[in-house]
Structures are given as C-alpha cells and as structure tokens.
Amino acid sequence: MKVRGRAVRPRDAGGDRPHVVIIGGGFGGLEAAKALAGRPVRVTLIDRSNHHLFQPLLYQVAMAGLSPTEVAIPIRSVLRNKDNVHTVLGNVAAVDLEGRRVDLDDGESFDFDYLVIAAGARPAYFGQEHWRAHAPPLKSVEDATEIRREVLLAFERAERMANDLQRRKKLTLAIVGGGPTGVELAGALVELSQSILSGDFRRVQTQEVRVVLIEGGDRLLSGMSEASSREAKLALEAMGVEIILNRMARDIDERGVHLDDRIVEAETIVWAAGVRASALAESIDVPKDQAGRIIVRHDCSLPNHPNAFAIGDIARFDTEDGPLPGVSPVAMQQGRYVARWILRTVEGRSTKPFRYRDKGTMATIGRRRAVADVLGVTMTGYPAWLAWLFVHLFFLVGFKNRVFVLLQWIGAYVFESRGARLITFNDRKQRSETPPRRFNAGPRSVETAS
Image (cartoon, rainbow, N blue to C red; front, top):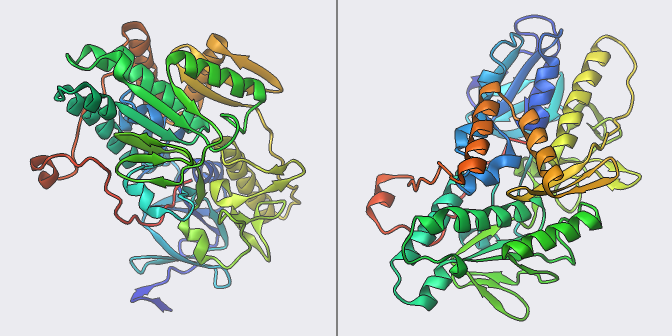
C-alpha cells in the first residue's frame, strides 16, 4: 500500500507487539510515552517540535527571568533510554480512525493499534485573528522570545524619547486576560521594570511604567477560589498594576486595546485571554464542543473508537462538576491513565473509568507573592510562593534544568538581577532594519504539543 509515494509502515514491523502512536510531546503525550516505555508495546511519538516545553514557566522566559533552554528539553533526551519508543519530528496532516493510520504532511504514514491524541491547544482570538499582529500569545518558545524582545525594545525606544508623554506611551504594557498567565505576566512585568530595567536606563523612570491587566469577567483567576482571586487583585494593585474588570476587548490595533468606553493606548500588548483546541482536531470527524475540543468518553476514548484516545487541552472530559480544566495535571494524569488502559487491555485485564485527582491550583504574583488553593485550603503570600517554587521545580523535566532554574531563582532573589535580557532577531534583514513595532502574524503550522 502506498500513500503519497511512500510506503505505509506495516503495523507489525519489528515484531508482533501492538503499535501505539502518540501525537504530541507535551505533558500528556510525554507521560503516556514514559508510562509505556519498557512494556510489551511499540511506541511512536510524533511532535512538530523537537522539545518538550514546560509552559507554566514560559512567562519567565518572556520576562527575561529564564532562558528557553531552562524551560525546554529535547524529547529525544527524555526518551533516550526507552528502547521501545521511537520519536518522530513532523507535522500530522490527517488521522484516519477507520483505517488506523496517521499521515504526516511530508507523505510518511504510521499505522497504529492504539492512538493517543495529545496535540494541545492554540490561542483563541474569538474570530479576530488579525489581532495576533498586535497582541501575540504566549504558547511557545518563539512567542516568549518575541515578547521579551518587544518589551526590552519598548524600554530602548523610551530611552531615546525626550518628550515625557511619548515616553509614557512607549512604557505602557497591556495584558488581555486575567487568568494565571495574565496575572503572572503582570507581576513579572512590574518586577522587571521596577527592580531591573529602571537601573539600566537614564531617562526611564519607574513611575512612568504602566502595566494594565484587562479581564472580561468580574474577577481575576476565575478558576480559583474567590479568596485567591481577591488576594491576587490586592497584591497586583499594591505593586502598581492597573486592573480593568468587566471589559471585553472590542478591537486591538496599532493604537492599543479598544474597550467599550475607552482605548488603552499601549506600546506592547500580550494576549492571554483564551485558547481553543489544536487545528488537528478540526480534521477528525468526531463530536466537539464550541472550543473545538474532542468530546471523550469516561475512559478518555473517542466515541465509537475505543482504541483511540484524546487527552489534555485537545480533549473535553465532562464530570459532575463540569469539564476538566486545561491544566498540566489533568493532561499528565490522563496520559498515565491511558497508558495503563492500553497495557491492561493488551494483557486481557479489565479497566476502570478515569478519575481526576485535583491536588490544587496556584499562581505566582511576584517576588514572595503567590496564591494557592490546595485540598480546599487557600494559601497566600510567602508560604504560597514557596509552595509554588517547590511544585514547579518538582515537575520540571530534566535534572539539569531543575538545577539551573533553581540557581537562577536564587540569583534573582538575592541579587535582584535577571540574566536573560537579550534582544535577538530572526534574520539578517530584521537586524539591518529598524525593529518592527508589532509582531509578525504569519501563518503557523499545526500544533502537536500538549
């Protein structure tokens, strides 16, 4: 059998062990691959990037606190000693559930006995994709380094402005979305400007920096308790963040963010207002919700396809309390569960429905400030911040990354310094020209990382 000129790999090539194909090397996909390593199955993990990204710390890359190599690790490095796991760098173009085949955009195909779709999510602009040119998202290493460049360039441009009014506009930084990403970005922006950059520049004054956090709902951190939401708001306001609630963005252009009653004129805007399922979900003929997520059954399988599973941000798993949130613990637990389900099925043993164990939610606000909801208890301030540090170090993939991040955090805490304040450009043409004020909103390939 041929597909686009390349032979489809036979399902039993290399032995008669069942073949498991995993799409996406994010939290869910990587956990599934690790759980299947060394077991009586063959595993092929496909991802469009060669690295696993620890997204909860991505905002620190954008705010010059960490470098990309400290929050990302090559997938092959993680799975290097897993002899039954094969890693493939490629974009998935189509999934044939009936034919049990995954096609890549370069023509190569993989047959499967079991399929795990962990392709993650992408930013949602609510039908206004042109906003991306003015308000980039924070979903990838490339996004983080571009945001870092624009924030640092805003200070560089402001330093050259003799007019106070023009300089203040250059130093207005707006964040759309009051979830964990928006809250953490806002706090980090204030610390970057007040503790670090104000000492590096002569004309830029700390009081001229304006950080605006815009949220369409009536409170920040809507997925956390009201106590955590209230504490986060008070802490950010004490740091000098301007918080605008109950206001939806009506338009975003070169002037700034257009609200119902005003325009927030900003030099730099970051989009943290929502996500929807990866574009790969659109090509799969299964039930989906309004956010494009695949609606899965009690065992994370696709309706009418018990050998195919969707986990993490691309999946909608409904419980008595509503759908599970799109957070990394959900994806990780689902990845391990699906791996166990496959192994038990291969061995002819019975399986149980998936049950999510909610161990809590947390968000950092800044230096020695955080909120956490753990087992029904709300923690705030310094204890919550210490808990946040421990949890994120524990789940960060790679021992070397843990050590480097810990050292960076110790240095930042003791010396109040950030070592990743580099302004980099993508090509020679961009280096030679005046840096663009807004981001490149060119097309992107299908995301396959949860």
